[in-house]
Image (cartoon, rainbow, N blue to C red):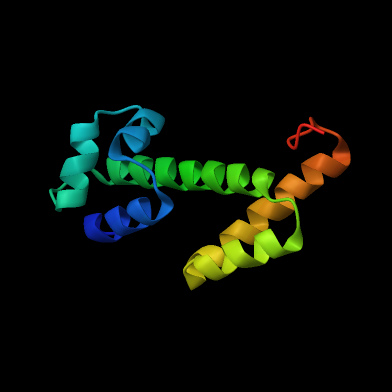
Length: 110
């Protein structure tokens, strides 16, 4: 189970606020703050908070992928990510590319 401080680092690195996590998890931002501060929370609450951050991080990555126009943009972004985040971004980018090929909307607006 992820500690509150590790969670906070992951959240901040993704540029996501405590309020966004709380809204996604369906709880108060005070609960997220307490978790990050190291207060004890139920295991189910910690899982909900972590799951919300994972979902939001994926949304941020997909939004970022939608703005990339060429492989140089992708390469530059990949180099800016911590090692552990690169794999997730590539998976999200692959999923976004598959949606484009299937014709499920046109995320580039072209």
